[in-house]
Length: 316
Ligand SMILES: [Zn+2]
Image 1 (cartoon, rainbow, N blue to C red):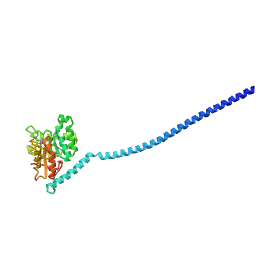
Image 2: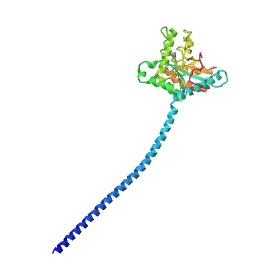
Image 3: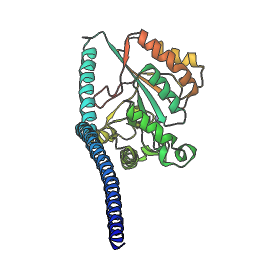
Image 4: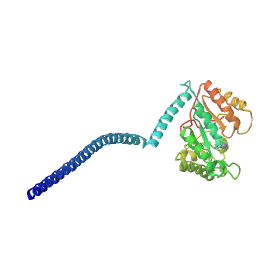
């Protein structure tokens, strides 16, 4: 009995050990499987990270290349103002030489300078549209209206006009700040006149960084004669002054547009250099402008914006 009991105990012990071993094997198998699975996942992860890293590297390289391109571009743009001034100087130098040739009768080309006085007005934008449509440069002899408060100033309309004049390659000329004529006006003394003129110059420069070098006397030199020293005084301030030798007549009359156009186109004989006086407040001049441009083109004129060394003292 004791033997049997001993055998039974051993058998139970063996079964227990075998069971434990079985459990151990199963646990080890499961753990191994889990570890193997995790290892594979980790490997995948590492592989993905490598791939991401490659993509990132490419992206980084692209960004670097973009950045250096931008830096290059930025460097070429840092001196935009200088480049614009240089190009303008070259352009006006060529125009000046052409003007001399025309005056000496050495060129068949004729120049027309379209000039608009007393602006800006709200209507000036429409004038700029026509000039843009025909790709024709002109000159705007402006007053200091922007400094006045009002609808156009409050809504930035004058600001927009000034900027368009400058940015579209037209010449912005000085026509004094107030344009005030009469006994109490700008021609009462040299000092009053120069203060008024320079006030407008400072206003344009402070607001738009643009230096005016061409001016027109309100009423022309024929009116400015009241102050004999005034011409020398404006020259001393770096200005060239310009009158006109053709006009629509819009300053004094309200003729129909076709008559404004005819006033210009029928009065060009013998004028190889034409300076046309107009006002950008005149609706009829605005309507006549395309005919004036096309008519002058047919007569062989090219259009230029006035510049410091261009024609001075020209008058009818
Ligand atoms: Zn005027």
